[in-house]
Image 1 (tube, rainbow, N blue to C red):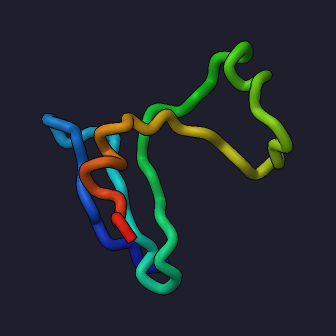
Image 2: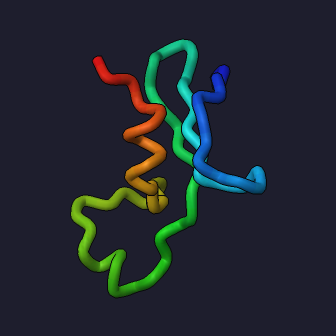
Length: 67
């Protein structure tokens, strides 16, 4: 997998950051992991291999493709 940096809203080089998977056009998001049991309990159809991150709206509105 080849990742292309798209953008970040971070001031100090930490997350959140958006990447594109060059081969597929899919996206990878770096962000704060969602770990609170009460928040995780609200999610549906969670696979054992899945994890969740919080994505600031600004990251997507600034850098996600418009098409």
